[in-house]
Image 1 (tube, rainbow, N blue to C red):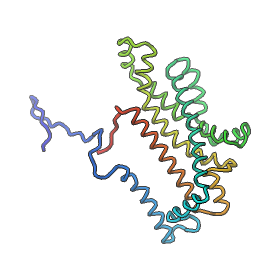
Image 2 (cartoon, rainbow, N blue to C red; image 1 turned 135 degrees about the vertical axis):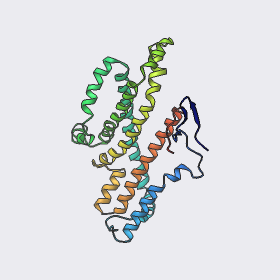
Image 3 (cartoon, helix red, strand yellow; image 1 turned 180 degrees about the vertical axis):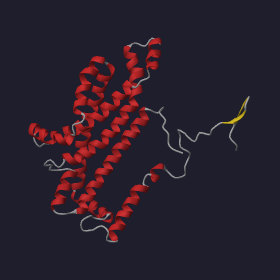
Length: 280
């Protein structure tokens, strides 16, 4: 089929065909199965490298040992307890950090005095790595659960704050003018224009925060943890159980992926009108 022709005085102009689309073509292969290809390929490559001797199986356990290790840890109950405790720490820190990030972003984004009062402090603390605060947190709070949770909260605060504030500050002024012409008061402007416009940016920041929460959990659970996946890692290092180390790291990754999938699912429910480019 030829491209459409547009007639003009100077002749026919061929209109360019645009390959961009916002909805994916129907496919016989589910998207989730396509997303498994690269992780499975990595596991197969890992197994092959161990089998042929490129990687030392005594130092780095092959993926084929993971199922047996999972059964062993599940049988003793250690894995279930570790998953529950680690999930509690990560989710608690994420909820605190993300809630504060969204609240302070609203204060800084909706009021000029709030912006001048909140944003300079946030920008001052932003370059400080969360891991650099471990010693200070331990000195002030001791080696306990709150130290781990607040360390995660500190790291997850900034992606939500920065992205939500950016969403609020990026609202097209024409929408604000249209709302004013339509008779919307300050409260209606916030509820019907500003917050809906900033919600996609909030979810972008939340996805970053979810990833950061699990990254910081690995660090936090090295602080004299008596339970959790970090405790399993520490004990495995002591007894040189590389199969347990690999299994614990794998579950960190799985929990992170599940958390990200939950956030994506919630964002699609909250923002059903939002479409994205899915590739050609």
